[in-house]
Length: 294
Image (cartoon, helix red, strand yellow):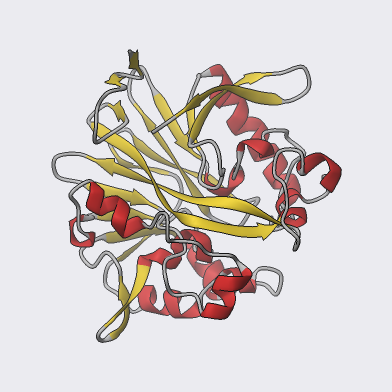
């Protein structure tokens, strides 16, 4: 059976777009407060699809993309990593026993040194914590040969966050990246490599960069926290973490309209059930039309 230009029986990679082989890797699981994840949506509604534990926390995935060519191994985000203190690992229920990023790479025959690029959608701990790791010489870059791409506006914000979102950043991780020569600051949307586009979003945090990979036939869209799970498909389902929720609303309206009309594959970073989906217009909101495994 052929879908999106590849065979479902391909053992190592799940999708090809142009020269790129794309696979989804899980870097662990964690939990966040369900009310914060769904903002003004009542618990009686969101708990139908995302049941909470006794502390009102819901399970979420830490899922990243690996985009490969003969000469490139590009990671999009890198999960929470192992730099959180035991206290915060317990608070966030961080579980890397079943899945972790290094193990996922190893199953593909790759080492951290083989990664050539890391595209950081933004620098919150659950997206960027895994870019650093403990070494014999202290905290260092997990992917020592990779160029790390981040947007200028987000970099400036992360270095001086507000009281609302300060806890989402890890100062030691930011310091490691800041002292490295392997960070490249980008100024706006761009085509990073042929067919690999970076799109901007400002609702969740300033200067978040989303990834769109395309050729003449297919598009894969990685929206990061603009659409953390399939349960957030309804336009008004917006996280309480978002700094500018009305901006999120309009960004979702535009992105989901394009994704629906273009039959894009949407790769979901945090959904505990769906790796990727295509969507359709329902009677009231967008709905999942097809579940895909990358």
